[in-house]
Length: 291
Image (tube, rainbow, N blue to C red; front, side):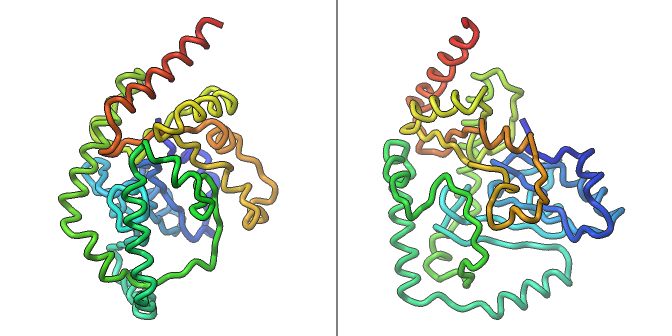
């Protein structure tokens, strides 16, 4: 499974007026950035990699997030490695790096109350990552889980010393985290008879259900095992930016929003959790076959 562009449609959409194309490695599954780069080079457009869910992943030996003109990673909750929030932006281009430096120089340093609040949130989230406690963050409206929030005014500030401390030994921890996620992905791929990926460290394991109704039933049964509905609508249906799409419809994006479900792959997912998930999915598949 891939959530990459339909490259034929992309070739028709990108022209000399296009500023940039954002290639997204959704759930850690690599997009074909080299192909997108070739397309955009002919049209003078930049390419940015959204590697928020793919830190440590590779495509053809190249680290995701470092292939295009610029890339960014997330350090937010639930990511491959986290300090609660924030992120990293990288580039190989000197002019883009200079622009990044200019922006960073103007960012405020977190205050003591902000730093303390960040630390307390990290403690709470680290406890709730275990599947048996998923009901707790899911019941907190302030986290807005399952929502697509467009917020152009979110605060931007420097990484605090506390968050930097929480990222100690990040390379070793990232390697260990991705090894577990890749192993979980192979487990699900094999059991569901999907094409296996030997190296993809799935941030979450994605599965498209047969219908919105089947997804709702599966989510109700497996919510306490970490099942998530993910994205509620296509980007084109977000009220604040709907105007930019001129009323166009995107059937594939709509189908994904209606039927996509994901399952956790991190180190706190037990064999019992995985077996319960697969048992329920197997029962559903058997029921569809017999009707």
